[in-house]
Image 1 (cartoon, rainbow, N blue to C red):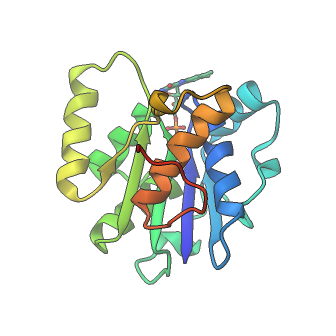
Image 2 (image 1 turned 135 degrees about the vertical axis):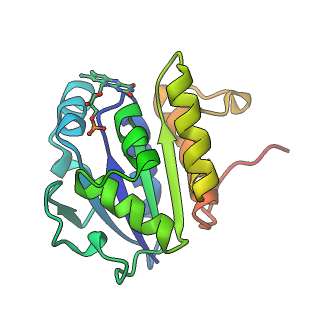
Amino acid sequence: MKLLTAVTGASGMIFIQAFLSLCRKQQDLTVHGICSDSGRDVVMMELGADVAELEGVTHWYDIDDFTAAPASGSNDYDAMVVLPCSMGTLGAIASGLSMNLIHRAADVMLKERRRLVLCVRETPLNRTHLKNMLTVHDAGAVVCPPLPSFYFKPASLEEAALSFGWRLMDQIGIDVAGRRRWR
Ligand SMILES: Cc1cc2nc3c(=O)[nH]c(=O)nc-3n(C[C@H](O)[C@H](O)[C@H](O)COP(=O)(O)O)c2cc1C
């Protein structure tokens, strides 16, 4: 399986770290990435690292490179996950504005009827945010906010983030060994 993961400038970089830790354990899963300029800044602020240091992504595309594979419907990505997904990126995807490679790749996933999961993050939500979520939902995307499952009683932020990573793996059809499920 080939997965495209996009990182944008919303809070919650611990979630992409946890998700990639699960990806790394999957044989036959290739993960490529795209990161927005704001995403780079927030990764640095929250994780104290450059996005390229995130383990589990074998290739990072340039955000402005519209000649890259994800810009074309002929690409062979099975799924795309935007984690975290800012309201700016959500709005651009909802409007079909291909202003950078993340927007364009998401647009391609929708038109090709492939799995697109948007882990939207903002609080509180205004009417425009809510309308944009409904628009992308109706266009075929899965709106999946990064929210941990507290009923597993996570002992750390990392454990909490991992519980969301499991949910995300479910969304892209990967059965993770050791994944906890309710009862
Ligand atoms: C530390 C920090 C945290 C932010 N958190 C959020 C957030 O949770 N949600 C959001 O929509 N925007 C957030 N923003 C604002 C976005 O980074 C900004 O709107 C940016 O233009 C989004 O661009 P992008 O979607 O191309 O990454 C945050 C910005 C900073 C600096």
